[in-house]
Image (cartoon, rainbow, N blue to C red):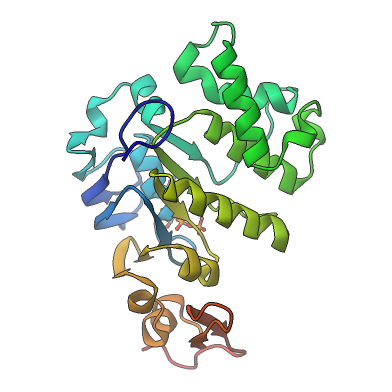
Length: 275
Ligand SMILES: Nc1ncnc2c1ncn2[C@@H]1O[C@H](COP(=O)(O)OP(=O)(O)OP(=O)(O)O)[C@@H](O)[C@H]1O
């Protein structure tokens, strides 16, 4: 299946027994994590704060050293790709980022084109088209001429998503992309991510929005202290006993009345004793 117009056929992104330990820490941030993110579907990574989700993204981008294990794109190790080759295949919306330069939104989104045209190349008609399309899909086109440091939290978030779309890759990784977004914009981002997956991209989505993940993601990986506590479809992962133990909070799992997906309802009051 072809995905982005970069010409790549979408790849399976595979984490094989990945182990990461940060210097000075006595426990592993990732401890034997294995799963596949396949083309044409959303693979969501969920889990409590500090469970290793962003470390997984950093490991993919080679920003942390693996103690053991491998991350591959269609059986090629990402460690064998130079940064530009990796950027032509994988676009990332990182969890946190502040505007560093006073750029207009359109210029900022255009930064996503760097793996295709180089840092100093003039934008081609194709670059300009990709930027316009990305801004439109991310719903930020009305802000094209605004400076990034004047945007609201939600507008800035959508500009960052647009920059990743402009990169035009077959693999898209989004680390909590709906932070700061209101309900309508949050739903619009989930719908957009869903459409991007259906067009054939491989989508890896880190999110705390379990109920939306249950509705949109075909494959969910639940991390707990750097290990995979559960993986599978929403029915396999969204189980009260599993989630209550991992999140250490009382909750019930019911059914979403609109679409029938499992829905999580946290209860009031802390668990008296941990299982
Ligand atoms: N640079 C670092 N140096 C040392 N320890 C780190 C570093 N970055 C993360 N950690 C630790 O690694 C573990 C996993 O962190 P990570 O940021 O991957 O979690 P997360 O699941 O993304 O959390 P959150 O939901 O809060 O964003 C945590 O214990 C964290 O404190």
